[in-house]
Image (cartoon, rainbow, N blue to C red; front, side, top):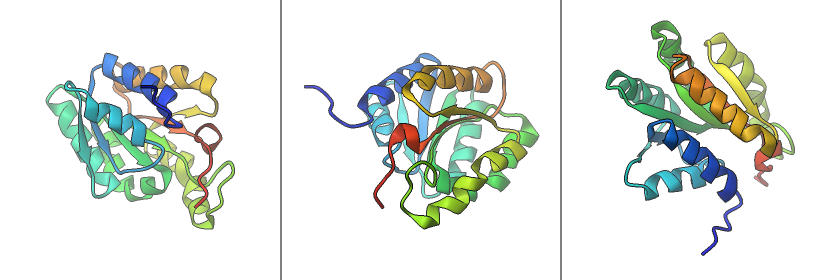
Length: 174
């Protein structure tokens, strides 16, 4: 049976790329932008998901995975990034290779005015915390951005974020 989820194709590609790179732990706060990626991680025996109560918990979980030689990814919506600066200083100060997947709100086509302030701060916040940013604006960007972020946060030992724009994801109606 074909998967007709709107994010099925790209989520499948990203999941396989992460899995091939050794990412085994998917820490997440539920969001429509990461729901299919998380469902794929839940379906496979060699990957696990961790449901977070708040985004900053994921930074600590990813740090713990790194300390035991495992790879993890923190999946969240851009509005949740505002919860993370103190914890992102851990990645910056300790030079641990945090991998994040951030689905944007508050940009292309956004209808919720509450999403715009944090959206405007995402890049500057990530940059100030030393996180490399790899944007996905179109389907053509997906593999390049994912590969770059995986490489930077792997052997490159850098914190890196794959930022999925609303132009790529599609704007939500709420």
